[in-house]
Length: 542
Image (cartoon, rainbow, N blue to C red; front, side, top):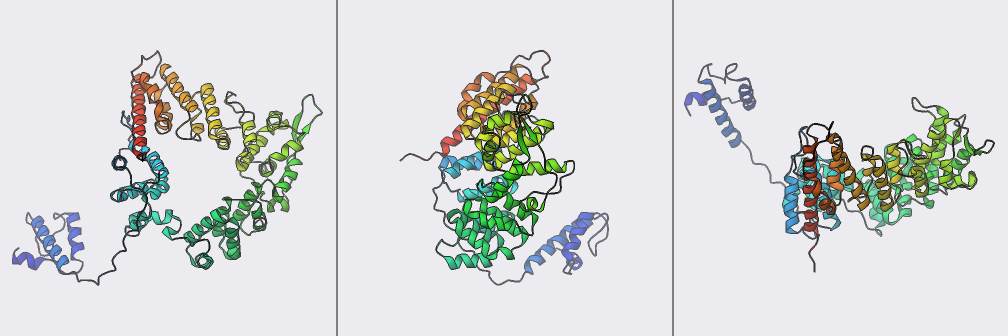
């Protein structure tokens, strides 16, 4: 390097920033110090940058050696079978997705199969290969829905890595306590110290762990600091009582009804209404029963409704929100909350010993049916009452406008969630057979995965009917994508006959036949890939 260039090199501490600015502007607009504009300016800039780089490196002062990281914790879980480990690498390497708006082709979307792969691997209790942990954490960083399963597979080493890389700090936030060990059941001093001095996440983890093994001890621990907690913390702690909720929790929840936070009061009231034998549930049953009765004066027994005319202090204390949302009448708003919180089993006694099916089938006077049945739907979901859910769902072959009680598909989906998996599958299959797939997407989302045989057959048959009718194929892309993830892999054999391009009927969407063939090929390929994944994850025999 020439003496002239060395003399022109910047010497100030911010020389590097000056060179970067010059490079960004271009040497036509700005030249390094001591350099004239012209064809030599770019070379002078590069010479100055090279010199500055050497000076920056040579000028570093040695710092005291930091403490070496502790070794990563040992993971004693069994390792993945070799084929499954290779499959995990493939799934994590795929970033193609389905974005871009174009046709997906016949290749499976591997990233959409990753959640299912993680669920099966975790069910077998495997540990992720150490070399896969960075990619696994990167995938969980980009998709929050993957985090619980990915962090479970990654195990304690994920937390060890997260403390070394800021990009993975979400693992510390997503894991209660960030890996802090919860004191044992007999370590009363440790429990008390962690509860009083721990971080919020550590206290949540402690309360959840204690609640799972000793519900009464968890509630007693919460009571020791309840009055001094912040409102938002009281709300989170109170929500932890859902696990193992029982009659012994009633006195504590009754006290929480007088909390200064409206959200805490509402949560306490909701939990109490989930206990059919609680005093709050009895109070709500009396209030709701005073508003609903059977009128026998006409030719047909009819439910008569007299909504509350006021929301008194007792109702508000028991969780009734006095101010109605915009567009809702106050009286209907109060009625819905009373009926929702009243024990469903009390209605048979109050309405002449009728069964839920008989009650729901009664006509309701003065256009109150929608409000009353919607409140019963919410009560059935909250109280996990299967007989009332069946009554409100009605037969799956009922008109699409709704069963005898359900007024929307969203409510039907929630009611189905209270039923056992087999009964849920039979109902959804019957709905699809009657109404097709266009209205069934929300209902399919509550079915257990992989879909039971009745649901799988109903979906495939409905897709075949839509294909033969020349229906607009892209409107079924959501159901097709759901089938790729949820259809039982054993159903792939039934789809071979659908792989050929069908003859397009008149008035069919242009290119529909090719799309259907492509979609079914992708479905079959995905199902066979899922079958291979399950085989790879199966533990070897003894």
